[in-house]
Amino acid sequence: MRRVVFNQKGGVGKSSITCNLAAISAARGKRTLVVDLDPQGNSTHYLLGKPAGEFKDTIADYLEQTVAFTVFNRRADEFVHASPFDNLFVMPSSPELDFLERKLEAKHKIYKLREALKKLGESFDEIYIDTAPALNFYTRSALIAAQRCLIPFDCDDFSRQALYSILHEIQELQEDHNEDLVVEGIVANQFQPRASLPKKLVRELIDEGLPMLPVRLSSSVKMKESHQNRQPLIHMAPKHPLTRQYEDLYRVLHGETVELEPLAD
Image (cartoon, rainbow, N blue to C red; front, side, top):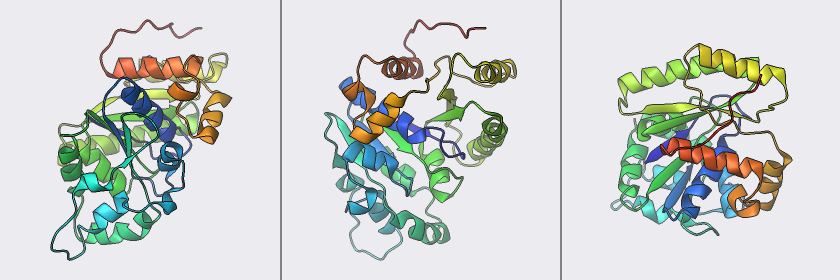
């Protein structure tokens, strides 16, 4: 399964969600790959412990060979790095993605990522794609390459307005490039259950018929500690409530039965 975590708005938890769902997948014994398409490289730093600019054999290096004249292109799996966690692998980002984007667009290489991930899917059970907070060449490539799309939502009105635009963009891309892409749902992140506004926004989105997922990820300093320690929650704090919420989200996305509390008044 190839899953992209996408939102054009920054600060909504794309990298945290990508890495923690992938870590849970790996902890369940599935060979899992994270592809970091964000030039900032947050997922790369989180899972591999070093900034993206310190790595060789990155996703940028793989894509660059598609626009350079080479007799033999290297396989996509040669750009995959093992993480410190069992079954969890990363195709790291690079700041060079910014400089490479125009070349890739000019050469119409928008389908190259899909080709690579389909091939990698023969070796990995699950592939998670982290994206930049923009609808650019790389995020479009990711949406074309993916089978499922998860949309993080920060519970404020600016995020709500952006959400409609995101869903429209995805619908257009489905129609033109990837009819197999399914929007799995919208996940409320940094949710504050005691505050009235987040609950009001989530209820209204549900009433509008938007695909809000029943799991809401709480705001917690534990996530910041997880980033600082370079350890996904399942490894750093396996019994923490936020870790359990991530596990519930993983189960919901995989069609497993989960007992969840209703949205309180």
